[in-house]
Amino acid sequence: MTLSLGNHIRVFVCVVCMGLLVGCVYNAKKDITDNEFIDTVKEGYLGDYSDVSVRNAFNYAFFEPYWRYYQAKTGEHVVELSGDITFKDEKGHAILQFVVDEQTNQFSIYAMKFNDVVLSPEQKRFLIGMVYDTWHAKQLAYE
Image 1 (spheres, rainbow, N blue to C red):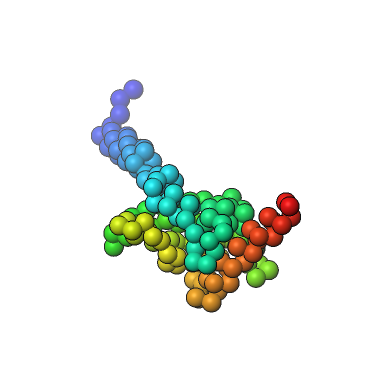
Image 2 (cartoon, rainbow, N blue to C red):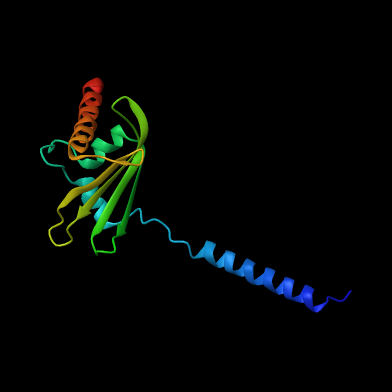
């Protein structure tokens, strides 16, 4: 069996495409889920909520919380928390972004979304308050 020039070219193109596909799969960036900036946020405290760490409060309120780190194009260190939560009687997916100052190890909430809608400052405060209220309610239930 001999292949014509046209079939040789088709086989060559198929092999090249498969190689590119395999290369893309193996070079895909993996999320950074274990790093010092994530630990800074998880072990830290938000504003007036100094009685419980961020990790404990959000792990109680979120269903399957997922923490990841990335460095923004601006150079900022961003820790992102995502998970499912009920917010204002609506079940959905929330994403919170914390920006960590590398020099001081201080962090602040940068952005927040619920079901792909950016939350206003009032909505952010409400969601955070709700998260900490959930933690306190669960603590009382275990006493």
